[in-house]
Length: 294
Image (cartoon, rainbow, N blue to C red; front, side, top):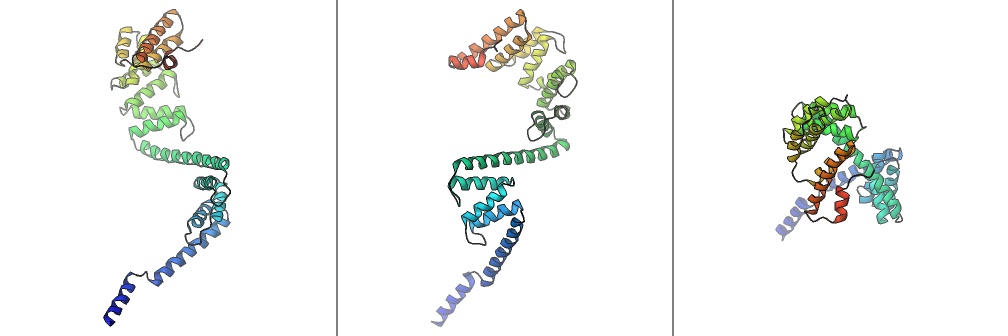
């Protein structure tokens, strides 16, 4: 009997959480709560968000959904994206606050926009670091960010410069974009001869978008001697693509004049026939193939 009682005591000692450890953990959580509360009351948005989480989960303090939502609100009003999301979800679910789907949508939208910007900023920082280290793909991506203003202020000069850096390393899409920048004078003085040179480099790497651009340059004699045979050679590489045919139609149509309009009509007709052959509805065909109104 004594042996049995001793065994039970030993098992309790081994498997029961030590009292001192429990007390230390409780003391640590209480200290963290007091520190967070002090910062939150001083207006620190990150602390307000953290305090909301403590009240919502009951970490180091009894759960209190109303208090959690109130602290989320305080942080949200300071622009804290994750707090905006949590406050929106509280409004959506009626968690510690009367349910209000209109307000919920407003705060969740704010959070989504803020988080998207933060994600773009992080992507920009990562891409910039790689681009500056000489990574051609990152240089191309950075050029795209500057060209479209994604995550950064739009800057065509910077975009073209990054495209140039990647192009000089043999990056086909960057060669095309740098060529197009030269063709249209986008962030760099217009130079059709140089444009043709870089677009040709991309086309020779089997970039299909470059086939279109190079064929166009040859047809109109922009930066290269006019050569309709060479233009046709590059256009044929595009295959039976209705969108390409349509875009070619637009190119000729926008040049004006009877001859160009006739050529445009031919490409619009080919586009029309291509999409009919795969069973598109007449309305979809019309939206895809028709020329712009004058």
